[in-house]
Amino acid sequence: MKRSCFQHSALNGLQISRGPIHGSRICFGIAKVQNNTMRSGRLSKSLLVAVILLLIFGGWGAMEGVMALFSPEYYLEMWIPMMNEELRPATVSEIGALGQNLLEFMTFTTQMLGLVMLFATLLFCVVVLVPYRKGEKWAWYATLVIGGIYVAGALTLTYVGMTSHAPVSVVMALLWIVGVALPAREIFG
Image 1: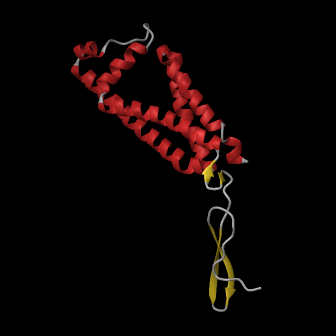
Image 2: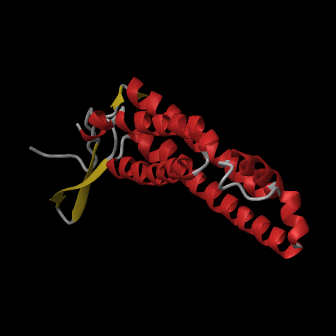
Image 3: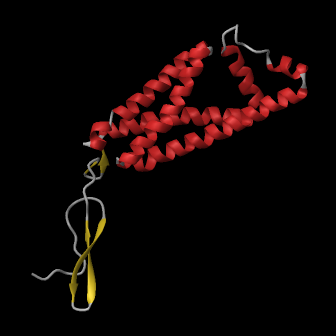
């Protein structure tokens, strides 16, 4: 039975495999591999819902990162009143009255936090949009770790004193948990 140099199969995806040697040349067969998350070229509903929830989660972090990066004093003014009264530092104007260097340091630190948060959430969104949407296992683990670090930090801050931030932290944690748990069986199935 003679095989042609290029073969196609009826499955989805691409995988290049080496075929038999015909005479003096090596032929390569192109076989398509089925991806378990794709059904007739469309995303499953659970994976689509998970991607949307995780993009909302990532968008919230990106928004906070942009605010902290480009408007650090406003960001500080917004976050300081959210703390418990025992832990609450002075207002930004009172900190500026103590010394301009202290305010500049706090502003710089807030901007660096914003930059890190912005790039981490953009990376998170790219992982969710491309490989996670395709159902890749490594992307599921990356989403679990990156989102888990954010959720653990937010819940820790809520526990130690930023109690008025609790509703937002809980909603973000729920979005992340549902977004990771919903397609897990499909990705690993």
